[in-house]
Length: 401
Figure 1: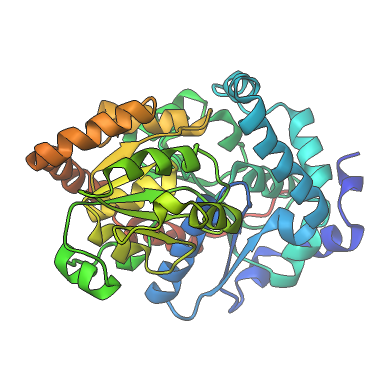
Figure 2: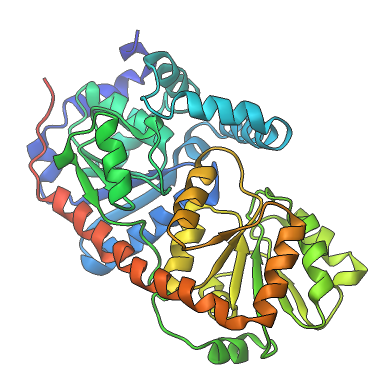
């Protein structure tokens, strides 16, 4: 039954693709992600650029598998996920928690494969990678099923949150790239062999590591030299961003407010229509490639705890106030950051205002958090994940019988 799920031509070609053929001058790395949140793909993009900088002869390809292979099904799944998060968060929390300590059962993996990855063998056969890196658990599961049938590649799984979940785990994964030692221990508890885990941090773009003063960044961006908060709403519009911005706007006379809505054009338009936000101390922007500059310009980031955003903030040493956490993986991220003094958490808009008022009166209160972030960021140096993937290219692929 499983074999019939794949394209016969793609699977046959892959099974005839010997390790020797795969490595005969063909140094291809395929990065596979999914569109369930932008952070998975941003991590893959950072890793792809790092690999090309380290070795320009390596051919790197990045794809969001569901969007590429089954776009209509993928869109339906994304909308279903967003609807559950917004309208039934408790149900999503229970579903997420049910499989937190164990891998997905085979029937769920089979359903995912049928829904999204039935054309995956053909796609891989066209590119013929020697190493595949998955930055989403669904994508990792799909490639793992092909490996079980004899796909002669090394499979790396890059975990993009600060806590491990059972959905990331498959016996066919050759190497897990973990954000920190705590995730390594969680993976071991899930049954992963210790020698299959490398602690690399989550890869980030180089510009998040470049030093720039707040003054330089503010001049470059054309904004005021005054206390500044950067609100990051997330591309899906989750996290009660409209209500949050309206609340923080009460401080606009003494506080510069930058709002980044990402790819959420509807949110940006809705905010731009609000008359109270038409103020010289308030700037609303959409997706930007200058996010590192905006982080440099800010004193504080106000955001929900997505794994990639947290990693970029740590790289910049930028204090964090967390708000609007969605159930599941972000709750684990929040606990990790708050427990280590790398962020504060606000339960509601009133707590956000109280925290901002305290900071404006006592700006020195941010310094201990900033110092802890600067110390922690050596755990996420961007070269570690690149080195781990290139190391897999030197490992001989053994084809399953």
